[in-house]
Amino acid sequence: MPLDHTKSATELVAVDANGVTYIIQRRYRSAPNNDGAWANYYYCLRGGQPVTWLGDNSYRLPDGTALLAIECRLPDLAPLN
Image (cartoon, rainbow, N blue to C red; front, top):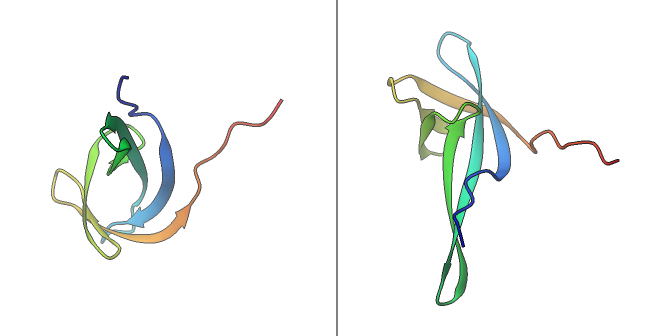
């Protein structure tokens, strides 16, 4: 079974010290193991750039920019036909 890197569980709205807003996605990878499915959560921007979770509501971009999460929401869902 291939790993699934596309599912997004939640989105976080975060801001840096200059007030710039970022959308961080909490995604997961799943892989089979002896006990069934295994999930590993990770954080990234919508474009796929990695984001490091520092604990509580704090995050860091690869360039060192510190972010503070101010809101959590479900991602936009496609309309039902």
